[in-house]
Image (cartoon, rainbow, N blue to C red):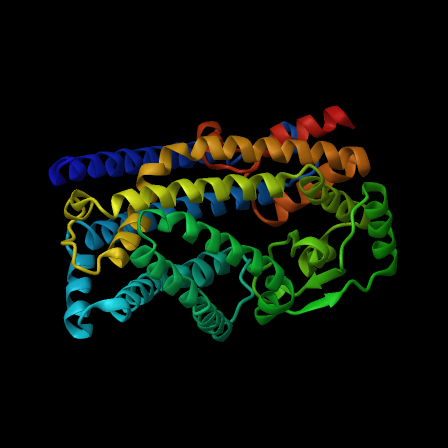
Length: 416
């Protein structure tokens, strides 16, 4: 392949994905807007018109904001690639560092720092304008900055992983990508073990569940489902947001069940039990293992592809970068930039699988808890989180990992 041909292929996929994203977003805006003033009949007795309109307005605001972010990120992508940004950065750092491993490390870290700085204003606007406007933001500006700094410090954990990867790319020859894959997966398993007790507490406080009645109900559910966990914890999610959720964290015997305090405050005990039963379903039906396996296989394939592309001059030149003697870091960065462009149209398949898992977890919850309680919990959570009840069907099929509310609840009620 020649550089101009690859440039044309890149631009074709970039423009195609951009057009598709904009078209789907505009469909979503029109569909939600048309249904703004009427609560769907299935939810008429449970959701007020004002709450429905708030959800519509929140959805419209977020969707329009996402279009602005999309336009900006597209310009950034072109700036780093065809407009010469990454090439300029690489040449300047190479001239200052004189090549070698230090140059490659500094190039990747500089790229990550620039990308983080470019994203920060959008994150700030999302948190302190959009979330604030709709009453969801509980975060102070000081906490926002602190979280960013902690995130940067945690990012330093990736430096040894980056160093090992670049060493393998340099010295392990054709099979470097397989050894890198093994290292990456080992690192991810390590994070699963460390996250509950070392990483998550850096950002939130976790306290044991204090409600004895709720704790007893949950322990009975765990016994019915044959599930073991190291503890039941409540997280102070209300420090940052009014949104509520529950999740599992950890690996093996280190698994923890975590509830947002906002969820505990808003749902009845039987509804909390039903939500937890849904999450237990994901584990009992091996959805987590299946997703991890798929991601591991995909990462193996992507690393093998990178192993091929890093040896092809047209890959660099076609994306506006002149390959240097130490070009492994350039290849790594270019690949991370363009992979989302070429893989975008696989999104519906991933969404389809995720929605199937949600239906299966709902059925599990209906078996071991109560379908009616899960329905009432979902309706409350849709309302509290201002999630639209009327998404555009095509956009939802393309993007959403969870089924639309009406479809999901209709299936649950059929199993009640």
